[in-house]
Image (cartoon, helix red, strand yellow):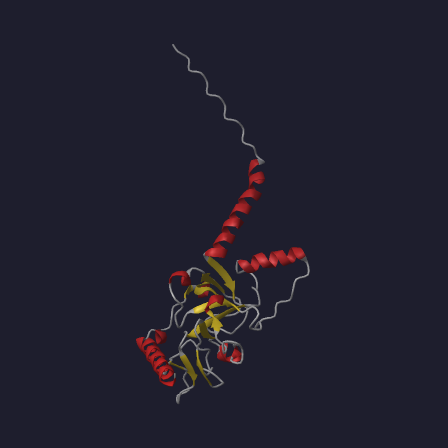
Amino acid sequence: MTVEPEAAPAPPKKSGSFWRELPILLIIALGLALLIKTFLMQAFYIPSGSMEDTLHVGDRVLVNKLAYKFTDVQRGDIIVFNGVDSWTGEVQVAEETNPVMRAVRSIAGAFGFATPSEKDYIKRVIGLPGDRVQCCDKEGRITVNGIPLDEPYLYPGDKPSMTDFDVTVPEGRLWVMGDHRSASSDSRSHIGDPGGGAIPIDSVIGRAFVIIWPFTDAGLMTRPDTFDNEALDQAQEQQAQQLQEKGQSTS
């Protein structure tokens, strides 16, 4: 009768290996998160009420940074853009003097857990390059290329605008406004600035497309039907053609 040799006992697990590996795993996870934040998506904290009732103070949204790498900005999109060296921040963020706390705030802001840079803004695109945006028509509505906008997203009780304006959006720029018109410092407040209040398309960080916090308000943010109107583009083309013909007749 053959006696089978006994199996060698399994080597004892090193109880401290997990804790030694944990910092490495955390660093890898943080690195991956930063890569995603830098190139793909970023969570943004809403610091002001300028987009109420669509977005409230303390909401977190995800911003798609690749949205405009393959498609153009569209009217009605909610975008995040950088207003550094141009617009004054709507929310003043006290500078942290402690370097450790400053680093913690910076990381938290990058992932949507703290107030972001006071130079990052979130607004709705109303006019594209070449659009003529006016306020207001006889019924008090904002018009784009002569087409009135139905704006159900406006803050309850707000008018489309408290000030009149008539602007043609320059090439390479966007006319943006907050949904809470009476509490938003937007393109209307910067008509005297370079670009006539319109922001450079190059300053756009990405498109906000979903609310992720609070869970009770979580959901996709879609373009309002009022902007899904071919007449807006047709009127823009006609306007551009008229301007071109006018320029040729005066040359």
